[in-house]
Length: 385
Image 1 (tube, rainbow, N blue to C red):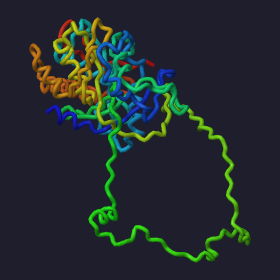
Image 2: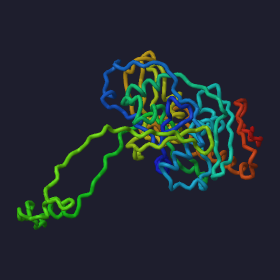
Image 3: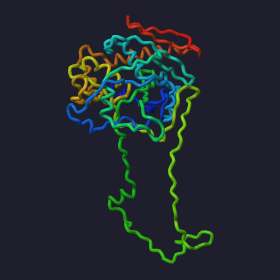
Image 4: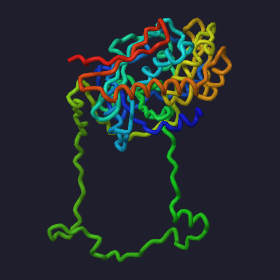
């Protein structure tokens, strides 16, 4: 079931947020956080971490997904997509689905759902910014290759995003996820041409040194320009190359800016979720299920866990694929059934699609969970002008 769900991730768009522009993207994204395996081999205690903000500044989910997918996967038909959102919104829905998954005292949230003229519904968290502090971002920076300060005179690399698509039952969902780390791009495999194959089989009759003899007096070898049969001397005037000036574009009369990168879009070999835990803590007891659903909903292949001493020194680095993380979940107290959790989430999303069918242009749907009970409430409200 898990592998089938992951294989349904069919659409991959990519964008990078310029760290000096709060609501801007570069598509396809610039050099991404690539694992540095030399750093991964660092001895115990060689890596020291510090607490810092783990999340990115607010970036418009709706417009960034539309633009990224239109550039990287122009064949996508948005009219066949039911809901577009980010992974954080789907993770919020786990609280009413099964409160035991989210180990936090603050499970309250308010989500808004607006209909797009292009077809899908857009599900967003209320506009509040609550950065979290921790050592995961520091660990991520310590095991990935350093990013250049500026890429090709385009922008300053900030936060990296991936966009994937999957189905929960009959609900087609497109999700934007923040990228932690990735492997290098997969190596290309080249097929041998027919001549090379014949030569390998000893079937080639041509002489390797097949040289055609030519008459040295052949006039065709001389360059004739304007009747002058004397060969012209070649000369080159080297000029300094000036990089093109890139201009930020405004996306469809919104406040989001975007710029086209000349990099060829491609999928990475592997995708990693990066987390840390102190040696005195029990990651698998308190964070396993949350991490599992983060990986599942974000199309992540591996968990890279940094084990710390005194929440400062990295003393071990552990790697688990999605199935191994799920096995760890099943070994904890009262583990949830992933199939049941996803089916309940599907029911919520299906209800959202149903209630949004007759939304007027000046209306939106709000989902409120107050945390005091297990009821998720739906409201139709007027959009602010």
